[in-house]
Image 1 (cartoon, rainbow, N blue to C red):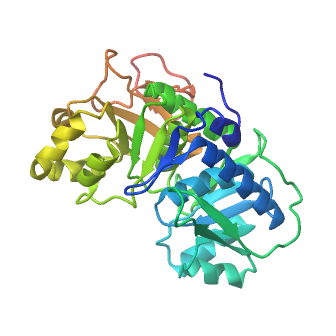
Image 2: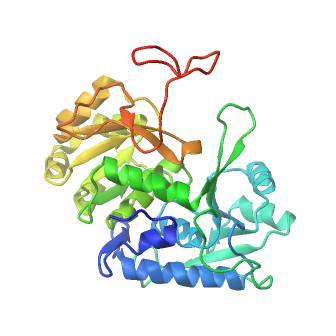
Length: 358
């Protein structure tokens, strides 16, 4: 398994006819199709004046098209996914802060992001989904602003993804992540979960968040596996998706896990069928209560793997290992990619094993 330095290189790892991106009730987009989509999307963006390190705000609903757009656009520009539920004043702030080169919205969108972009003379690029094609297939339409200054596929040190995090400040701050950052994180997650081309991820995480983008989408593609994108999280529909997608794993935040558990008894048949397919359940983005971990493991009869991540670190920093290694409920696990150290809170000195710090 080679280490990929760019998102486009990562796509080359999947078998040509193997499924890559899917959605409930739709045909799968295979790796050959995803590679072709990436190549055509980058070429089209270059025609529209968008190239490497140009920031492209993406405002799309959770969908296979959103996952595919993140991947395809990220092969040749800097993606900046934004929450489609933002109000116009929020889009005003984010588009200003990003200094966006373009805004991508779906065909027929009424998003207030369009008005915010118009006020700033930011070109709007329309994503037109292929209604007769597989999940995630699309084309980009817009007015040319002249050829891109830096066209072609992104390099390892180019910025692939920009997200905002409140982090340690009251004002959201920009976090730029390079191609090498995001592909390395995808690899760390893939290795931690022992993903293979046979795995099927059910994504219920929002795709404007680092958790869904890296842990669900890119880690699956790193392994040559498939990711199946639900239209957001809905506890009433999860069990139907489990039946249809037959995932080998899913990743979520603790509140989602708790919502799933609250309806598990009413969907006992689906739970029993899911037990035949699931290999693991992953949890991240906030602390998973030990009792919830136990309930999940009892319900689905698979190990629950808790991980710790930060946007600034391209998501995963630590992860509990899979059995037969020891997992510790309530713990973030062991370093899983980046080097991790515990320091004291005042002098920033590295601490010895057993000492308390942060």
